[in-house]
Length: 390
Ligand SMILES: Cc1cc2nc3c(=O)[nH]c(=O)nc-3n(C[C@H](O)[C@H](O)[C@H](O)COP(=O)(O)OP(=O)(O)OC[C@H]3O[C@@H](n4cnc5c(N)ncnc54)[C@H](O)[C@@H]3O)c2cc1C
Image (cartoon, rainbow, N blue to C red):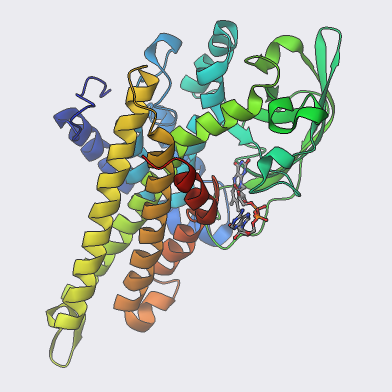
């Protein structure tokens, strides 16, 4: 797996491009055929999970030392981008596996890494990330889920909301309050397992898009876990959660890029075939200008995302400048806004047909919307950028 690029003067290497070709071929053959039905029935994309696991693409970010593929940050982006190009719901498998497990990779003990990253890499269990709560969204530090020490155990009580892949995942990184007087510095992170007594799940949310990705509440009712399941030191959970997002917002940007690329590719093909006024609609300058703008916005978003991925990789290798926070937020915000515009224009280019479920573009437009909302809304990204201007 790609891993030795010069990340100072960054551009995708030949290895990254070979990876892209391989993932595109797999996604078109094994994931695309189910995308419309997965959306229509709001069902988990099991075929995608099996294809990704069989090809070691479900959690590519896990280092080789823990049995993973050892993909660098850009290779991870490329995988998510290519899966999202055909099915945004399926792209949440590699994306959320990184989101859920990165706190362990960034702050966990060696013992925790060995215990959880191996099964993740082998496809034995997916990993979810539990930060949000019903009353604590943008202001995540206002969470109420409590963890109370009891000898060699912690006991967790509370409700986590909007948890992607909840119920499907085996492992959950859960942020909980261990000292209510210290707000964000009184929050700690834990690994909770689906089979732990007291863990249960709410009904799947009925969503506008990414309907194949289950989003559910996670209920923690007196969940008693060994003290060594704490990720890092007590009180560092919120900092770990935010450091995680610096890296993983880039994977949401990748998802946005993939959705937008899928929409542009489809619209480009359509306008060549569709004839009005005796010629293909793609011959009209008004249509060409729209395609030009879509391509321009997509490429600008891609360059910013890859620049952010280079920073993510440098920081992971311990050699980065600390402008990752700005770049991660900027890539997510810019790419998701671009994806919303591009998918909306792609629907427009198909005219009335774009507005129907017989074509994939309305699905792509609905799927694009979530990239402006999760891992922090785009208003929140702008707050993060303003506080971390390079
Ligand atoms: C499908 C889906 C999947 C998700 N997956 C996960 C997951 O796996 N794990 C997880 O922990 N969370 C997850 N989330 C939660 C997601 O990150 C939150 O929904 C998001 O952070 C916004 O929180 P909220 O919905 O409570 O909105 P609110 O915080 O209530 O915001 C409402 C509005 O107010 C705006 N706003 C809030 N504060 C400010 C401010 N200071 N300045 C300007 N505007 C502001 C927001 O931008 C938004 O427009 C998911 C959400 C969805 C919908």
